[in-house]
Image 1 (spheres, rainbow, N blue to C red):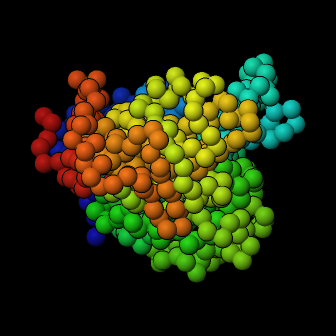
Image 2 (image 1 turned 45 degrees about the horizontal axis):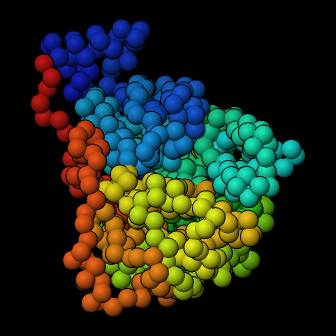
Image 3 (image 1 turned 180 degrees about the vertical axis):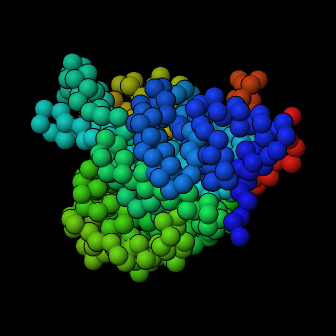
Length: 569
Ligand code: FES
């Protein structure tokens, strides 16, 4: 017998409620027969001109709709807020949880049976999946796709990664401001997300690995016709998922998160994946902790893409994308369901790689060990992280004197001071940039190298903070120190001149002072003044959790499901 779908409570109802719901929809030219009990599919779109990375989603939604109509569903597109990483202040991360609330409530409150999430720029992917996981309808995600590779005077250039390099060159006096401005046009040749394995492409790739997006979701360029075809197929697939009642809770299991951690290591994926995977797992009710990320620490780096390697997403696409990576790491993968219908291991075993330099075989990796290393010690009792594949290898075991910046403003004021008392061995420490402190845990952890040292040729130093860093950034950068300094975490007690020891192999991060001295400093510590007395920033500061648990709001963890008991009229 045909299952009565959730949407029928809206569009199949008799009396005035059904009249109101159907009549209102008919304003858009929909005829009677589309309310016959067919799957109603919401297309949750983060398209926005304020977020150019997602600008292609406006037209991509049309391909999704074609696929839904063709498969016998009724598509209804709706907007949610869009988060442009390089456009929002103080940081897009402060709004990830707001987007997740927007998505969750938009899905639950409407008469839809399944959802297609249209995501792109960094936080739009986790924000959408977090919200959808708390409702748990059949859900599939398609990404905006990477922008075309940049090209400056005949040389391929990468979003983000080359920005950091060019700005250092300007500071070093080896690039003119005129050339710098010319390069910014050459970098952005099309809409789409950053074309490195930055946070957006990392998260788009992990959507395939988690099993919530179709194969090749991350790799087809934003303006490639194959992305339109993938969107059409995504529309086809969601209708069948509704018929099969294939909900997110059947996909997002512990095994899928373990696969994501392992694949993230092989990808050389962004450190931001940690907070996002932890937050998504929290919504899906899957137990996952920071320590689980050590699962990836012995996995070799296979994907030779910036910022850990050489190539860009176009080459990654031509080499076979995520399915090719999964094929390479097949022996490490757990069995897990996907929205495509096949298991992840079935997808992996039927895929192949077309370029052994871009996606390396296990026996010839870019680096023998990649992944994210979790660090602990008296500076970070609840953990900190580093991405060894993006760091200067000689700095992964290092001891040096701390130079402490009390805030990002303090750092910006002093970093170009020619008399700043630092050497290449100094450990730069930045306080006040955690989830509550910034607020929003901005991507400022990859502090610039002090100007004087840049001129001497120094390009990497050990840097420690409770901030995040862009997925396109690189360096010996320790991030996500928890608990953060602005709530009195031990990072707040580190002083200029303290010796700090980092040992990535051993997973250790310590300030070399006695426990007594630590306690003395704690008794003298004064909490920073709260500069956010009202509005969403206050809600954020009052409820955001620490980085080691995903920085979701404490009251959003878990799911409420799709039931809405009360009617509107
Ligand atoms: Fe949007 Fe990089 S700034 S993906």
